[in-house]
Length: 233
Image (cartoon, rainbow, N blue to C red; front, side, top):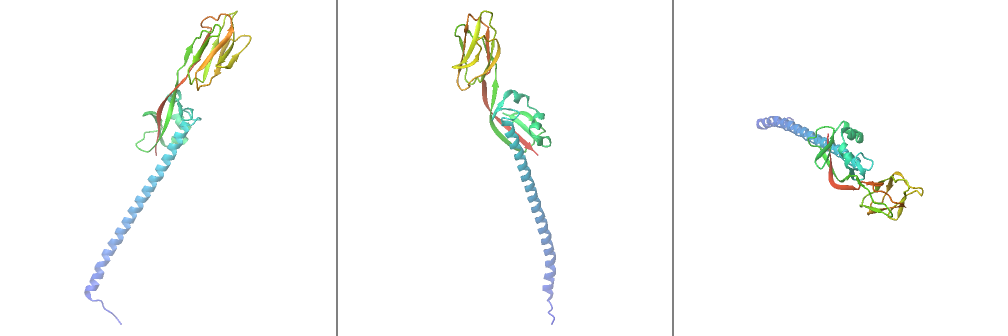
């Protein structure tokens, strides 16, 4: 038994076919765009994650005691900072050779492997340590002494006494740091306790002329700074 569609119904079916085709095309386009956006978002996310890993690794190595800048953990040596360059950066973090990495301290560029136009930034609060050598010539006749400031962790003592004069012991507070009963002569470096002032006392016999003993020391001065590492892949 055959059922014939009336003409209006057939016409409506034919009219609906192009609309369905257009809808399918639009759906395909929208799905493609959504997938492209999702792929782009994932790619950007992966790139950002890679940038952050490299930035964190670089910052951690620069502030570590074994790094090229640090005097000790999170304390940078000002002299090393002033000579830091691209080659040292690449030796410290080899991936920087193929990726743009920039290192700055308090806004001043220290080293970079390219020009950054964005990227991922990591910051570390550090101390920058500077040392200025000072020299004193204490009067050591009898039981003379000289007081060195706190944070002085070592001193270089040069003894040059004339014949007939002997200087045989040097004490840092109550600790003997140099001793020779036959007499001290020459240059000696001694370690000191940096947490408090240190009194160096000299013991010997005879009149020691001025300038026969010199003491050189370099107490550190530290300032706070911000180390910035930017990676732009």
